[in-house]
Length: 510
Ligand code: DUC
Ligand code: ZN
Ligand code: ZN
Ligand code: ZN
Image 1 (spheres, rainbow, N blue to C red):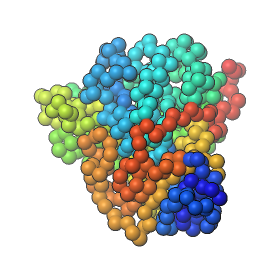
Image 2 (image 1 turned 60 degrees about the vertical axis):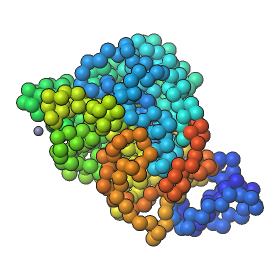
Image 3 (image 1 turned 90 degrees about the vertical axis):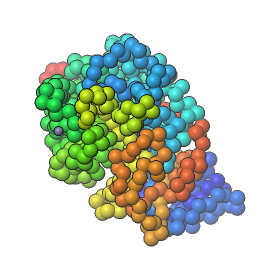
Image 4 (image 1 turned 30 degrees about the horizontal axis):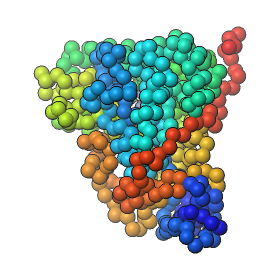
């Protein structure tokens, strides 16, 4: 057959199957054949997988690029000064823009990201926000990309008039909302406004579930006791804070009969609420992240301010039982997806200030002033492969399911997330295991624009050898060889996973 590319002799993994000695035939960026010894016409590019694993390109459904992070800091900010289109002060942005963030993505086997177009100003049209982010991303992305919209002010104009346009004109079928952070959070009343419209339109609502008042109260009392070291970021929001908000928003979603995804779940108690809801067949989905599977808070105690490198929300937990609950939740299906929540800022700012260390009076800073979020778009897939599959904790199929297939299905990326005819030829070819020399990660090996990784020193037993997007090699043997203009915007369909059940509480029916 006349293929453009044939990948030969791989161990091809999908979310359900493994085929050894398998070839993949690609024509015009699409997979057209999968099977043994595919006959290829001369002229086709050939890549020998040498028996190594071939997995679908990673789909990272939770990535922040070019996003103003000041709002995650515990101070009131004047949101009217913020615009998404222009970067007033790079220090106030997440560490990565589209070029560096997506370069990092492909170097770690991720071929599609879903990143956030974030409504910042109180009165801002989300159509303008989406257009602004399109400008930021256009010709600046090494990988394919799609958008979620963050809603911080769900006016009737937005939920009634702009949501339908968001779905129909832009192919955006998911929104994220926050239950915490003063400048971002929605009250329960507003969450219902979003859900009511989301249900009608087939939108999936992503929720950052933490109880804002508890966090504020705890933070204030910790500051009075001078417990302001970065480590105490976790003290200010123990697992029950996440569990309460998770349970509350599940109740709201049940009332509205609408699918939600609980983003970046970190603790066992919240996981249990999600599991219980799923057992009752509610369309409740869960996401966790590698930082909650691989890190524990103890490492944050070191140094005066070093712990700031691991400040994210929800926090990295101190109890191993929470970490174990993340792995159990991945294995038993409670977590539909594992995403990076890549939301970094530099540890050492160009202006000499350290990450959030804005109060020079305290040698260990104030955790309240540290922007929340970590880099991780490059390490997600290799961590799950090395620390999950090769360490015997999850099967190859489960790895594919949570890093690629499910995020594609959940968010309506119809041609992403599998290796089968008709799908985009987005592939990761790994090293043959016998040929791979394990190594310990250092930040210099990574391709983001951030000056640290929270996963420094972790051992990797494999790493993507080739990353291929729509039939084109974009990363090979440690080098990014793709071009920044190559990544395409992917308009999305509605979720392919189960949605509303048409079951109502009391006489309420919309
Ligand atoms: N939530 C995110 O999703 N990312 C970074 C910070 C946060 O709180
Ligand atoms: Zn969040
Ligand atoms: Zn302390
Ligand atoms: Zn996030």
